[in-house]
Amino acid sequence: MNLREGRIGTRETINVIGIALLINGMFSIDSAKAYANGNSTFISLPLALALSGAAFLLICYAIRRSETVNLHTMLEYSFGKVIGKIITVLICLALVSLVYGPLVNILAYLRIMTNDASSTAVASFILPVMVALSWMGLETIGRTANCISLLFLLSIAVIIVVAADGYETHRLYPLIGNDVSDMAMFTSSGVFKFLPPLLLLLSLTGGTQGLGNAKRSGLIASLIAFVLITIIQLSIGLTYNYTELQRMSIPFSQISMLTETLGIRFDRFASMIWLIGTILTCSFYIYGSSFLYAKCFNQRDIRPITICIGTAAILVCTGSDNISKTFEWASGLINLIPDLGFAILLIPLAAASIVAIVKSVRSDKKKRNEAA
Image 1: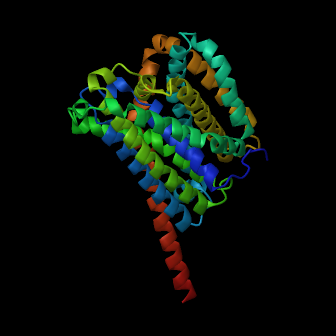
Image 2 (image 1 turned 90 degrees about the vertical axis):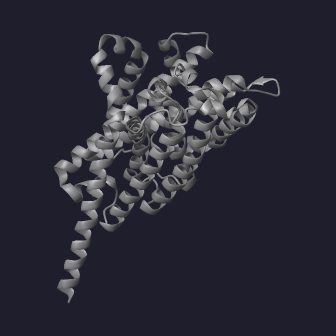
Image 3 (image 1 turned 120 degrees about the vertical axis):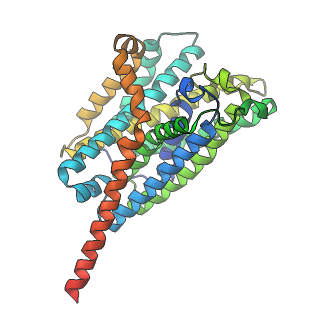
């Protein structure tokens, strides 16, 4: 079989998942919605990540308790093969959809950095690398994440510290301008962004050297991302008020443009690191969705589906403006999917975990009765 899984250690796993969570927290926000009536992202995004982490721990326990190997085998154990495969396909689609937001936003940011070069010209240098990384598999993605993780953290830390002189607490007001229903919707959308990478980790337990290592790595990565995303969103709110943020596609990148360290435009350095992180994250999603598809439908080689998904991502991202104008209803549907993330992913996965735990408890009880 050619599933390109390989083996990666704890440090590589933490780096891959941590970068993926941070990229989703930095480059996947719809500013027009998130800052429509105020700034609450420093509450809703960390809360979404906390909910995703809690779901991750519940699913880990269900997999261990039911003595299954990974996520997709646990789903089949809980609901049977047909429903289990359907939920696995939903996870694949969630991973594929997560490629769109960060990639389109980083391409738009790079267009500004390259004096308004066309999307196709910028993408032609970037997207083939993404497909190549996906083709090479998990081990290559993990080793690459290991190389850039410290630089990625440095790019965030320097911008937050250097921009601190311009922080003003009054810019956070109104502190919670959005009502409860809006907060719930933003949190649900955040769950859809943060949960799939953690679910993918639980599907790649063979490559991450077991469930225990995957659980530990995912928990550490989530804690690190929780702290950094909270600090990033607070720094954004302290630098710009919500009316200014509504017009920014990537607010944190605007802060980077204000920073100058030792006479150097630090945003140039940060943009390259974020670009590599985005390519790495999208490669991880493409590889993961291909891997799950291959496992779900007993395919022995992930390379054909990897090329198909990668090519589709290139076509959609380079033609995103035309697609939005031509198929407005489709664009609206794509934007609606993350808002329904709670119902699409969290509810069926929580139900599957509970069913797996109950079935395993009953099975253990039956074995004890037979032994007695």
